[in-house]
Amino acid sequence: MRSPLPLACRPLGLLNAIQPAGSSYITSRLYSSGSEGHRPLPLAGVTVVSLEQAIAAPFCTRQLADLGARVIKIERPGVGDFARQYDTRVSGLASHFVWTNRSKESLALDLKDEKDHAVLMKLLGKADVLVQNLAPGASARLGLSHENLKRNHPGLIVCDISGYGQNGPYMKKKAYDLLIQSEAGMLSVTGTGKEPAKVGISIADIAAGMYAYSNILSALLQRGKDGLGCQIDISMLESMVEWMGFPMYYAFEGAPGPVPAGASHAAIYPYGPFETGDGQSVMLGIQNEREWQNFCTKVLSQPDLATDSRFSSNSLRAQNRDALKDTIHDVFSKFTAEETITRLEEASIANANVNDMQNVWEHAQLKARDRWTQVQTPAGVVPALLPPGSTKSADRGGYSAKMGPIPKVGEHNEAILAELGLA
Image (tube, one colour):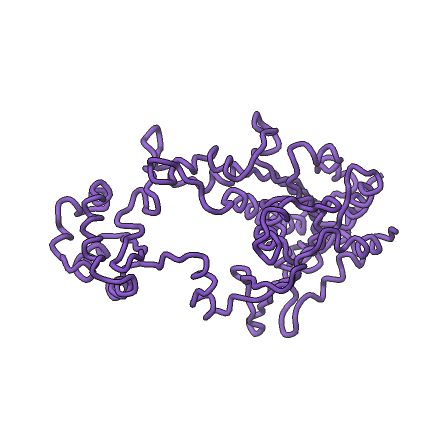
């Protein structure tokens, strides 16, 4: 017999869009999550249950947790999310795991065990959102498809994240970040032309995680209008191909695609890194002819170069980039990186330092904007960057993002089972 539609899922307008599907302590205890002088966080009261591993789903649910959602992370007893073992760089903890799992509760369940599976199903009766990125078909075999769950939980939002989507010839194909980068054509536009290069971060996972996050927010708003949950089908391939829009249109109707250009831009020049006299590099970008003239006159001190027939348009500069690169390096070799950036600033030419990770930790702009805080981990306190876009100004109706601890495997079993009335 179907349960009645949860009160907060009934179509009472946008005000109710993100109210919890259950009315018990398991969700209501987060309503007071606003700090003194701030409004409660936008997702306070929303409960997310996530069968997650690696990066895509954990990255998605961490965004939800940052906004105040209660995220209950289902992990395998003992070992937990396999991303916990990727490395030991953060005081013995894995760098990926620390990045994507703050502010979550860990519930260790063996879902092949009948009693543990029953715990999960009872927990879903209190949840607003189920997120999963298990192996293809695994969640359906566990009875966790939206089709199966909606009979008893019509307001539940189910977000499935996979490599290739829930249907199609690639549905069951294993998918890791590098493999998706390759399938989506990313490797055809990276590297130097001699050898492709993967993007140095898990960009396909991040893309899928962010589309899952934004789709879940949209589904919560929609539920506030019609009272119904839905299924969200997020494909890493489709997320990555969406980000490949420029090179795809550049290669429209069989035209050659962008030529891999290392750290330089494939179609705009000069746009990329250039070495300076102290062995460092600076990054610069010329976007229009006015900037090109300023660059030639004020930075290179060669005003005639602006009208040189080889370089008089962006297309020509891109075609003759090797000759222009030699000219730029000849000038830059007389200056340090700091002096070069000063010249570029005075000419209003866009530029940047070529930073390594230690430079980013110490970045003056992040410090000036007070973007760093701390989070607790099983290995002690570590620094953490506040989520982009979070606000802290109470007089503007702002809020402070939730920056809770990173859990141990199964750390919250006892508390969650007690809330569910289970031993």
